Length: 270
Ligand code: ADP
Ligand code: MG
Image (tube, rainbow, N blue to C red; front, side):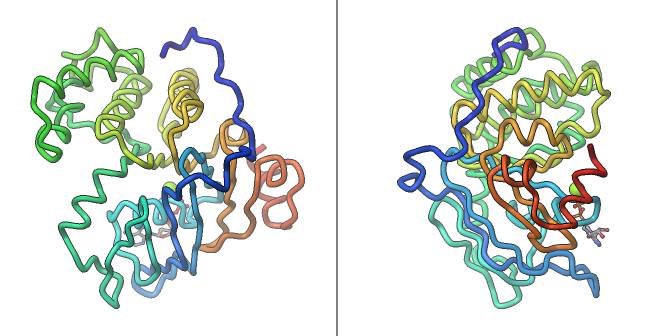
């Protein structure tokens, strides 16, 4: 993968084989409050294998909280989460009933954060091999071999021994994507992966994400890059104050929005 490669083909919005694709993730009636603040008020969504679901919405609408609940970084109050066919066992209060199940399912998910969250005292190579070696118990030599391949894929083949602080934000985010890929996740969760970047560095990160989408990686992508969402996603979800206000294929959500709130939102970010 290089930034010089031709742009990936835009994906068909409704693949013919869609109905036969396995379900990668299903969230049903997710609720989450922080104290008296109800942030998620019953969110449901499904992504099949290979789907790219863009999640858009104003600041504070609950986008990050939704991804964090899916990745067990937050405990939902209620709702159901099914990942690769496995239902997350929850206690009545929404907390995980089975720690070992969470550890196992976590390795099927990989999250890429706005602020990269690389380990600053480790080289890029060490960042990428950490979870494969220590959590997945992959032999170190194999993890190193794969890490070099992944770093090369995101255009950082010559930076394996560099520390994050010596890299640009765009390079750090591409390294974070290589680290996420190292567990070969079923679903990748991106939370505004380009919003901390200087404008001139956004493109190189979007190129990497575009290529992952084109090769059929399943992803939930929170983004404020509407043009990009329209291009790579096959489904778009608009969140408003903790509820899905409107969703559909990008041509509909962006080209023919129904909800007044969505219309307003789209004109505010245009
Ligand atoms: P978005 O990502 O759409 O901007 P968030 O999910 O980050 O929105 O936040 C939704 C709301 O939840 C905001 O009002 C935010 O202040 C609040 N919130 C998020 N995380 C916490 C937390 N850990 N404790 C208290 N309030 C939180
Ligand atoms: Mg957020």
